[in-house]
Image 1: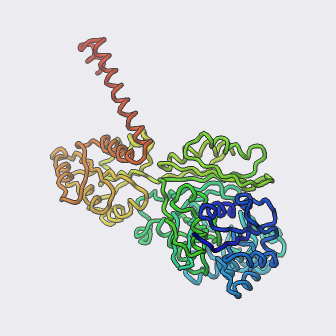
Image 2: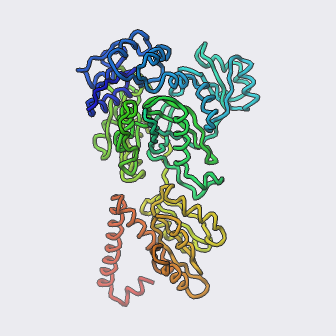
Image 3: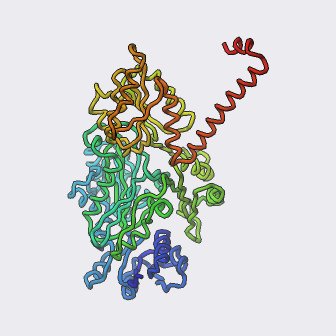
Length: 568
């Protein structure tokens, strides 16, 4: 179908996965890398590849003479020769200008600042005096970073106090230009893969959470679990979810660059809910490995589609949740997680075919998919512990159910729902949202609930009981109303208010004060698309049956007269 030939600079694991995607589409991919058996070359050994450094201008020109489009799997290439080739009409994506800009992290930040991309403050540090000035300007700690040839934490040094200034320069590679960056007090790290076609079309993948260990990506969770907390602290947080804002920042950043392909955008989620862009990779990225199993179109296939001008594939997830675990060189323990993965449902092992297993070297990864993020966590955990029994990486969960009530006096009724959800291991949140006293909070809660990953809302209210209906008018999610007994009318007024909703605004309801049934109904709703909750519901029903049968047995044995005595 596609006759144009693609050449790629670099034949590591990223190139390997690009090659796998190219093979499925019958796209000719020629690799330039020094090893004759590099990870990418192993996948298509019948193809004639080039042996040599992807930084060698002569070898790059040789490759260019045999292909129609050149791309990269690593940004540390010779951009001067790429610019020379581009001037002759050779298609190169991303453009040499973009690769060159991204090679220098400080220039990258200066460029992004011109387009109002949110960033941590930074200062050029050409000498010791400038480093000391950064301490005065930013305070301590601050980050001292190499402008070039920095990756996986290499090229970064934390200046913790004025006492560190003297030796700060010596902690980084000699001769490498430096810059300083204000310390970012982030809550967690996020990433977004963005694909941009030669046609100008831009699409982004779901926001993921990345967990780093020793400055190397350790775990990736997709989608990022950043929906906990009913509302934020600013109008911006009210108006757009963290996922929406992160994707917008990433897309705006990539739109400011030239050329096509997939870009990895790393970001910080700040403690106040703000987003700061950290850095960009002009190529497929570790944080996007999950897309092979979890998305309709992987980042690797979309990279090829983008640079060839083919229609972009869907970036949406085709599973509820996914996680990725990097397999790093660790001597005899390197592949213990992989051995476990064979017996864990939903796992896919990717080994890169690297001959030498150095400590900390990326040797492969394992992708896990599941019907919920909780299931993904449960499947990942034994593999993570196999690599390091002391691993304490965070496992965040977005609430699937939101319990809200108009007053704290309703808590005595609503806590039964919380107990059921806890028993069923359903992630949930519980808070106050008053339809009458906090109307703005109620409005934003209703509008944002589905965007935060909530699937079912349980709303308790007494008296006029407007909360369930008002929330139902604002959200597409199912709402279960719990009528709370008040000081007058015994809760009948609340029940009538909830059930008498106008046509088109449905609210389910339960008996007065019966938040237990509301929670059980929520679990059944979740079970319609998350089988594990259906199983838990069935076990709950079995336990109720056994409880009643035990009472029947007791009644038969002791007789009704003694049974009443035992019961009380």
